[in-house]
Amino acid sequence: MSIAERAVEQVKALFPDQVLSAEVSAGQPFVCVKREKSKDILTYLRHDEELSFDVCIDITSADYLNQGAPERFAVVYNLLSLKNNGYFRVKVFVPEDDPTIESVAELWKCAPWAEREVFDLMGIEFKNHPDLRRILLPDYYTGHPMRKDYPLRGMGERDNFPRYVGEENA
Amino acid sequence: MSDAPRPAIEIEEELSGDMGSKRMIVNFGPQHPATHGTLRNIIEIDGEVVKKITPEIGYLHSGFEKQSEYRTYNQIVTITDRMNYLSPLCNNVGFALAVEELMGIKVTPRCAGIRVILYELSRIADHILSVGLQAMDLGAFSVMLWTFIERERLYDIFEAVTGARLTTSYTRVGGLFRDVPSDFESMVRAFMVKCDKTIGEIDEILSSNDIFVKRTRGVGRISAEDAISFGLTGPLLRACGVARDLRKDKPCLGYENYQFDLVTEAEGDVYARYRVRMREMRESLKIVDQALKALPAGPINVDDPRISLPAKDEDNKPAGGMEGLIFHFKNYMYGHGISPPKGEVYSSTEAPNGELGFYIISDGTQRPFRMRVRPPSFYNYQSFPRMCEGSMLSDIVANMASLNIIAGELDR
Image 1 (cartoon, each protein chain N blue to C red):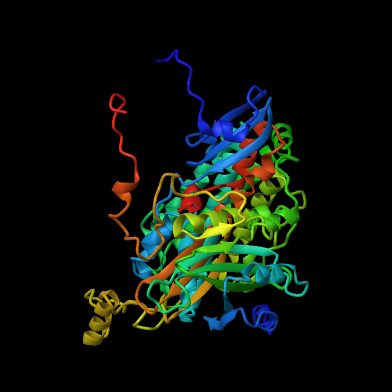
Image 2: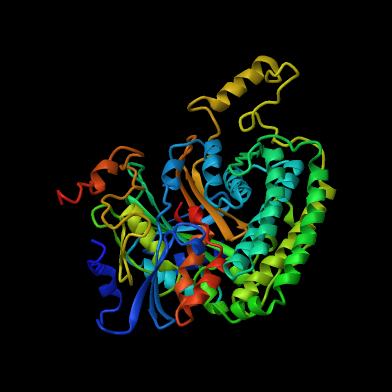
């Protein structure tokens, strides 16, 4: 049994009411969970002696607009256990009307920037984040480009940037 | 105008707060030559001691992930060139492997062999330039010129193979753009002899150089525990004594068949990172040598007309007559090209800077629903304040060069 399969079993056993589904895609098992106890689940995966997912390889997000997903947004945690040499993925669904989720900056030091990027590009807010600012886009930018309702070009480009008016008109 | 005092920038108050202290704000970047790209660090110094660093990134943000959602899988290969532009072939291979893992394709032995050779040559191109620029930042200018000569030789090989020096776009899903030229092996062998000599020369001039060693040893030290928590990968992690290399731990493309050592150093400082890179280049040469010897003949694309284009006959028409022509059209037609099944995959390879991951969500169409790149530079750079705070201002340059941040990959 691979480490990811074991992790799925453990999460299902310990947080039965939180697991939305457990799936396997391209041979990689992962779980989809509700966001209420997402931090508890990740804390357990991080600190459990047997699983010991000590590296958070990546935090990212996806926008399931009109896709029939449980909620519109998903925050995706790709974890790595160095001890067991195995990856595991946790998808946390976040509703559209309240796009907030608990930050995991306490668990992994790599989390702050990754969460800032999710906040910047997808507009999901992280509670108790040490320094939640935009990271890739300028601070005065409005909108979140990785959302599906944000077009590839056109909207935002002209409206978002302050126009240079010259010193005499300022 | 010029005599008027410059207004205090807002960020200054934010950082220090106590006006009238000896602390000073220094802007390092975004156009500083030692940053090797457009990055900005707001550094708060007390005398020459660095108190706080606030990195600002995003100057090269190009929205690669958003653009990928509007392109077919074989078109995205051209976007991956622009990420780590010192070793574009590694990005090409990493992306192709991710899509192949999603679709369950296994590439042909010849394709795997060619990919491994080019991957390791790219690693040498990346590492050797990183070492050269590191030496240049610390005052050894000739080393940089030597490394650029080697890089030029490598680019000649890449140009002969892919047709382009930088924007290689060489891989396709399930294979390659074309086979290598007939004199490929002799070209690579000639390069290997010269490169081995250059690596020896760099080793001779830097490794026991008093100035270089004093500027690098003990500088920018990070513990293994911190490195793991910060998500460091690649040479930076191995320089902390953690034996993690995806070529060994999660082998693909037949890496398990090649004999090479996993390089680690214990100290975790700038010098250790330099040593790891130097030793890894020698290991890469070993892999290239074995892969060249074992390179089998045969097709480079998988034998599936829904994925690869049909071969051309002597009249430059798709082989297989009408059927070949239909497959050829279908590969390009909107709504008929390569379409992985519904699902998602996280696939990673050991790029020169660390773990390069591709997280792809497919909705069954020709374009990815979501493509996320796990950029090694992004996570490596996050640990930069931890490495530098408390050190001298001049150590920042040494440290920055050892991280080998590539802005194209950092900001995407």
